[in-house]
Length: 128
Image (cartoon, rainbow, N blue to C red; front, side, top):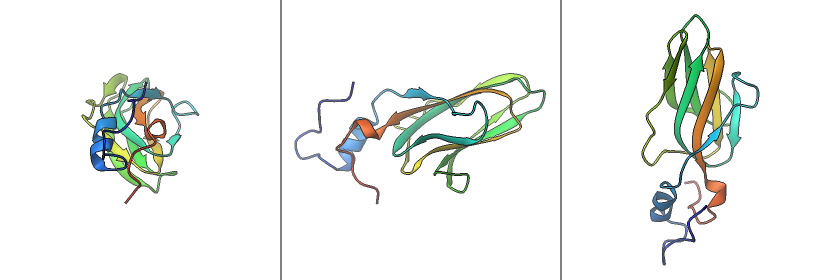
């Protein structure tokens, strides 16, 4: 449930964004299984990632702020062969303005991206 609204005088400022950063993260899965692609479009606070690699080779997951692999890399998660890995949950998160896109290299299995959607909170400041 989103917070009731911004504190007085905080509408559209960074204090409000910090308050929203305390919102719980929700799980998002890539639409095409473990292929590279858009996980979610729009403004999100990226909070963490979990992966289960069933391949016999190690791989890498890159989280990008963008609509394709040409966006700005914000996080890397190396995953060993036949193992699971997760990132630490990242405090207030990493603000992604365009969307969450993952680039998957050499993995098979399942990935879950944890993020808080800023679509639920209409008082966040515009991108600068």
